[in-house]
Structures are given as C-alpha cells and as structure tokens.
Length: 150
Image (cartoon, one colour):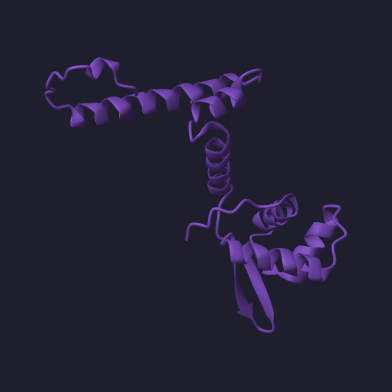
C-alpha cells in the first residue's frame, strides 16, 4: 500500500526510525527503545504517534494476544522519495533538477559515491535514449513550431 501523501512530523519520524530498527513490536517495546534513545515519552504518547502513523498509511498493526504489534509498511527509501517529491512539487513546481543540484552542490563525496552517481546518470541517459527511439515518428513541419515552449 502506498501511503497517502501526508508528511510526517519530526516526532512521527523519530517513531518510524525506531520502528525500522525494531522491525515489529508492541507499543511497550517501542517505548523502551525510544527511552533508550533518549526520549522520555509516555506509553500513551507513543501509542498516539503510532495511531497517527497508521492513519497516514505508514505503519500497520496486528493484534497478538492482548497487545497490538506495529510494523512499518513504508521503507526509508519510499519515505525519502515521497518527501523529496513533495518538496520538489511545493518549492520547484515539480522540477527535480533544482532539488538535486542543491542536494549535491558544496558536499564532499567519496570516489565510490561519485561512481554511483555516474552509473545512475549513464542508466538514465540510456533509458532516455531507448524511450526516445521507441517514440520517434516522422514529424511534419508546422508553421511556428520552433517557437513553442518546452
């Protein structure tokens, strides 16, 4: 299930991170993990945050005995992709390039990371050329067609 496009708050993200580490568990176990991580949250606070995340489509629960066990149904990569897509839409009118450029400019990357960037760009370029070839059809000349925007 793809979650409804709703951003997560900082506290909800903290719960998601803990639940990604825990994988699955009851509220009490998650509360203990969060407390170990330096958050002094009450059981009811953790329960409320989990209920919000479940309503938003990020976690699911299953009753095991008397307790509900929660697990994340959205990966970190899925959440990151959704959040970046929402940001690009809100700030850049949906354009990804300004977002990508700002993410990478002024940052230091290892040779391995740069190699991964190159591989990704090569794949994107190759996929784009394959797509362009499959869509290529003879074009008829139109008056003023060269003046049309993108």
